[in-house]
Image (cartoon, rainbow, N blue to C red; front, side, top):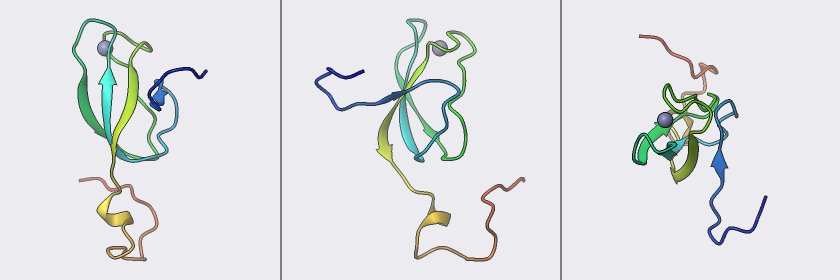
Length: 83
Ligand SMILES: [Zn+2]
């Protein structure tokens, strides 16, 4: 699907997140656009109100500090941490 003038790629709920960053979240009318940080390795979530009609557009890519080459600890491979 091409043909939009902007090079924006939107993601649907259930798709894998391939890039951490701030995403614009676009709902189906019930709410204004807003932004949210989503982390790589997760899946884009369903909206509780508009379900799978919600779309996510990468606004500002942002690597996690723990993934930055100068901050890598190199010991713990899993990025999953619980409180
Ligand atoms: Zn919604």
